Image (cartoon, rainbow, N blue to C red; front, side, top):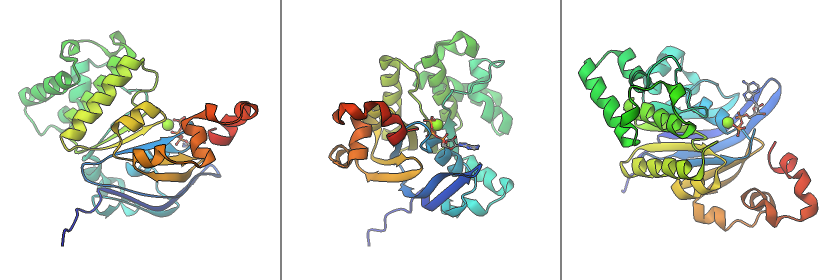
Length: 262
Ligand SMILES: Nc1ncnc2c1ncn2[C@@H]1O[C@H](COP(=O)(O)OP(=O)(O)OP(=O)(O)O)[C@@H](O)[C@H]1O
Ligand SMILES: [Mg+2]
């Protein structure tokens, strides 16, 4: 028997309604150990909500979510704590603490946990910043950094936590092509190191570059799951419309956002 490892994350028939609005409907996918999974979809399609569910910040109305084999929908915040320690999130807005230096931001979780001596935390902080090419900003405040630098500091912070599972929410949003390319490169390097990654994005270049598998969400529903090659070959009009809006008839262009996004 080959006995492949069980998935690290598994969503089965997940539905969620928020404020009376169905936000996700019957979403099912697995993330294998070491896999880079991209969740692709337009604005408001439910991508961030999926990450919040995986972090246990929302509970599904229907279906189940297991992380490391544990059904997190049934766990209290206290029971979730050790599972959350295995995950680190790179936020859509970088979400650095403005009143803390880059060093303090990157080492925040390790200092707060208090399990390692200061000198060791400092070393991890330096290594994490070095990995993202920003060791020289260690003493700066977030307000002194560009958007691209802030995003990379956010990745360094996630790395410093040592979590084996990284979740990214729109890691290239608002970045120029060079910075976006650098973020994609970091994700690929982490993939090569065996880190499991879930990347939420509507950046097609990034999605096709880093994904082992993709899930595509439209208005809360899963419309595709498979490899980048399979996605590229899809002829379904809604999927084609998202991947290449200009391929649709010009008389539809004004109404595309309400049909394919939100
Ligand atoms: N806490 C909440 N309460 C009510 N509705 C919410 C809440 N969070 C999200 N929603 C709604 O759920 C839908 C999906 O939101 P979500 O943030 O997951 O989308 P997204 O795909 O991440 O979009 P974007 O690309 O703009 O970040 C949206 O219609 C949003 O208004
Ligand atoms: Mg979002």
